[in-house]
Image (cartoon, rainbow, N blue to C red; front, side, top):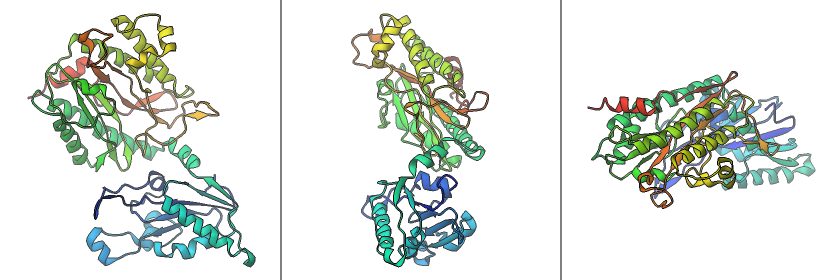
Length: 424
């Protein structure tokens, strides 16, 4: 509210229920911005922030207590408990919103909200503004300008508090255990979905209610498909398995990728490529510190991977020229990281005045280089084809450098092989 300024109002809507089929819905998840400001997990709710309002600056509209509805779908908080649990100044039944909100808008010069996110909410806001305008002859004053709330909120979300970091560490620890469990469960004859089941088991047994995103369990050449989520093919000795998975804990995400051999032993070609990716990741993590442009870790991975591919003969020519020409993109076609938080691809700008912004303490980013040799790549020897490798960790920028939140999963070839040697 300090950033909104005087004579303003900000409105934010909870996420609606989404129909899956007929009278069944998808599992409900609150809008990330709404949750960030409220901690409230029910649908059909609206938050109003009115800086300087004497009767109360924080106003919540939510579903009223309803014994019949609660019998079918669960206990509702209700306005009275919303005041005590969420510490809002005032709370009203959602059915009173059309009656009360135009009055809250009256006299506010600026209206902040997240436009075009929910068309139905846009329509209601338009109706409330028209309501106030219709009473201008009686002295009412409608907002004169509309400003997007998203940039302000998302800049705040980019910097994690101690409490947020603690939740992210918990999500990281659970996810690390899940990855190790999947490694220990891998063997020829099983399928990718068996390993996905191990992940979900560890997530839920540890208090996470869901993955933070669709888990990728990609064996063999499937690892060369960046967002492979079918997770149905068999595991075969001689193949690698790439798992990109993380849980969501109390709305905060983890995002980890590890690549390991089904047999428990890397082949010479697999190890050669893997060591390049690991070197790229370690050097990128080393430069993830305050004052460094956010894209510098990516540039580090490009340089290391390009030089490594030249050494192995998969690329030919001068490294600087190959990088300038983008030749590495045949093997490494994505960025090396993204913000992480309530969303797995979290909110926050990557630019500052059209230039890459610099890293600051409290930011959390992934570092995830990879090498993917397409099975159809006829430019390289057959022994390299169909190998896909990615290594990803979640890295908190600290005042003095960084902290890897997800270091609970082995990632050197030696450590992975040692862990997998423990399989029964």
